[in-house]
Image (cartoon, rainbow, N blue to C red; front, side, top):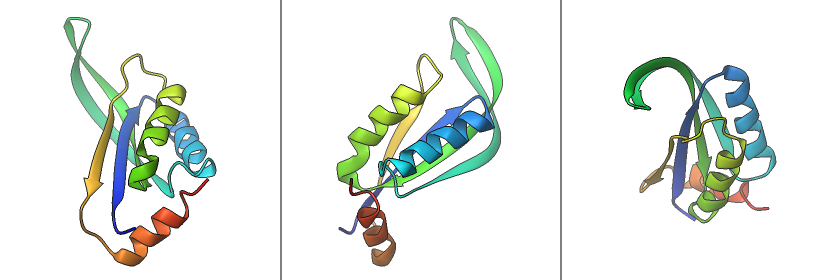
Length: 106
C-alpha cells in the first residue's frame, strides 16, 4: 500500500474535534488525526454571510477506509451540513504509507 488519503473537517469546539479524532483512531478508521488551532471561517448560511471560529481536524487513512471514515465523521459531526473533504496523496514516504495502512485495519 503506497497511497494514503487525508480527510479534513472543521467543527465549532475543540472538545468536539478531540472526540472526532479519538473516535476515528480508536475505531481504526484513521491511523492518526491532528486537531489544528482555531481558524476563523466566513461562509454563506441561510442567506446571510456568517463568521465563526472553528477547529480543524485532519485524518490520515488508507484509501479503502475513506468511506467508513466519512460515515463515522458524519454521524458524530454537530453541523447540519458538515465540511468533509477527501484528498488522495499520490506520493509520500512509503514507510509512513505502510504504517497508515497497517493501523487502519479493523
